[in-house]
Image (cartoon, rainbow over all chains, first blue to last red; front, side, top):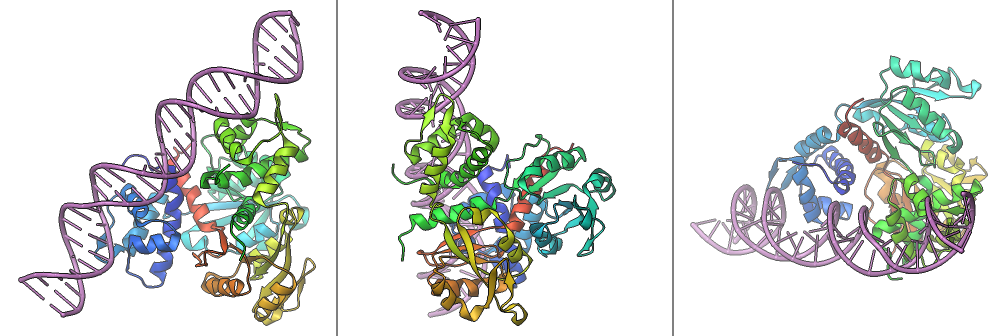
Length: 209
Length: 209
DNA sequence: TCTTACTTGTTAATTTTATAACATGCCTAT
DNA sequence: ATAGGCATGTTATAAAATTAACAAGTAAGA
């Protein structure tokens, strides 16, 4: 079914989130209209996107939530999950360790890293904090393939380099900086400030009420 | 210069982040080539986007970082800042209160809200935790115009409704759910799980190394 | 002084993305 | 049975976004 367009790949994870919510609420069927209105898209877009997923079981009620979720899990690579390492055990790092959403999907934080001596060997949510020096060793031992960066911006690139050297395959970056990574490594940025500024801009463009 | 296209509005905050970083590092000039290569875009895109900002001081070295930042602050509405209230003082909420990036830009969390009695009247980073029942009162008193939702998903819509009733103008939502808000209220979602799944998908699409 | 190598700012072309429209099918209710 | 309403799937159209190409200008160095 050819290559999936970028615009579609951005929406697929949103579909998955919506669908698993609906599934958990007991919905057996979901129509393109429902997805569209909930996500602020048009039904047409949804149906076009689905063409890239192959056939999804459907009836005159819409698409099967079970099957739709299943297909998305396969396509997105969610079903395999991943072992993750988090570098930078600050308040944001802690928040991510405690977040339940990932674990439900087999995305598991296996190890924490920090350079502050006081934190080494601490245990948070059953996960041990290691010295950054042991990154390569632990990544190998725990078969970790995703690195989460929640360090300050000024050391983020250095941490990224270490993760890459340790043969990690994906980086989930929360530091406010544009990391340089080789082509073979996938990068996803979570940009908090830009997201907030984006909100400010929307508000500015909106007639005040 | 007519209405700014959606695709552009998504990039502008990224430009701003990059530019303020460069500015802090002492750079006086930045070219469209530099921005593009750092952000993974083409120089042409940058220059097209700039057309929506009006004239930016430039030389044969590129654009003036000072002026570019200034213009973006005006256009994005960053320069005015905002007073914010955060609802849901969990670990993610705490992380946001402690985050320094917003405060630097006059986006200030003025009040925290939670429904757990044990948290009421606590003080985090000089900010007081109030009962959710007092939301309307405090929002008015502190002239708050942005609400941050870091509650569990199942109460997020209810919280959003309360914020809207309190005449808030923008919602920054971290709960994994698609909120319904009236047209007059701006909404920006931070979607952690979809972001992670997006990373998983990129990794899956990448030849393993 | 002149050449080289960089700029920006535009216009034009291309590609991508989103929307609309409609044929077809299924379920329900009359 | 049959009409109405809502579904998907697909084709065609429209809109939006990206990229390419190039004129014109500026600074620096030989």
